[in-house]
Length: 188
Image 1 (cartoon, rainbow, N blue to C red):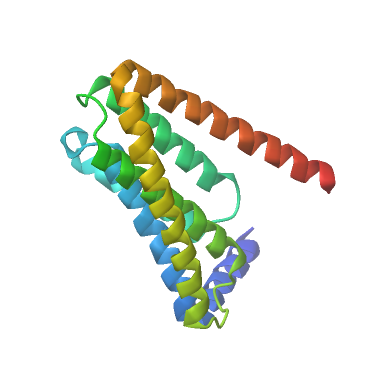
Image 2: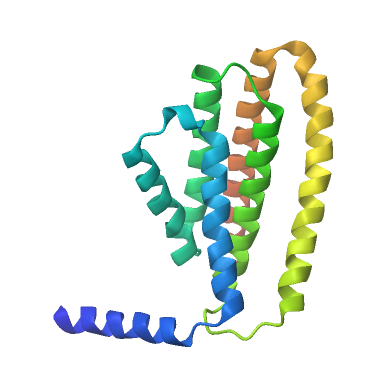
């Protein structure tokens, strides 16, 4: 048991000493994006010192281990938390908070995907990261424009319509993810 722990410690130490700048920047951006998403999802009035510390630790998990289900579970948890907080604490949906949340979640997701396939010791040209971020920015801009239009249209129905639309969107997103996961497993 001690030998296995020593081996893992040495492997982690080697990974840290061989790490290069771009993969570390990507993983740092994953952390910042998840932290920003939590900041937009949960208003500062409901935070306590212990809660903030726990959220920082939770946001760091996908940065250290971007592969696996933890990233997806964290995104779903943040969205569910936003829906609950919006329905119970905040007076209606605030467009700036919604746009910030969706932007931060998309960036967290796409950067975690990049971090998952990018070894920590990879030598990457800065242009690769710049193209990745430019594509992500284009998606965020297009989504923001569509989102503002859709929220403006749905806003005519009141807060109940927006909450139902948000819950419906969450159900659709989870269903699509489950179907895609099933298709991937089926192919292998």
